[in-house]
Image (cartoon, rainbow, N blue to C red; front, side):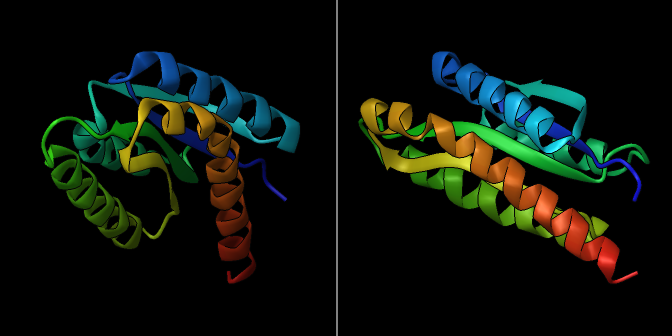
Length: 139
């Protein structure tokens, strides 16, 4: 079987949390024998769709993992961010017929809850890899 190559799109907003998520994702991909061919940093979760689309167009990217933390502020802005990002992420996966794993925690979580969910970055990598393998089996 060909080597699996994934891209990772990570939000810089809540940097202390998302960069730990990136570290966990990279380590887990290595554990699974998966190559992280590209890492694309974006300002925030809302900015992810364009980066995801660019990665999905590349031949050396079999799927994309998204990493971010949408923490509740004083308004409901976090809902707008997460609802729109999740919808577009799904749309892009369907459009390009490549998996895009949702590794974005939130919305509405506190900083402590976001910190407790850092390890979930590994779940997003695993989800992406499982989907890539399943889709390869259909060919």
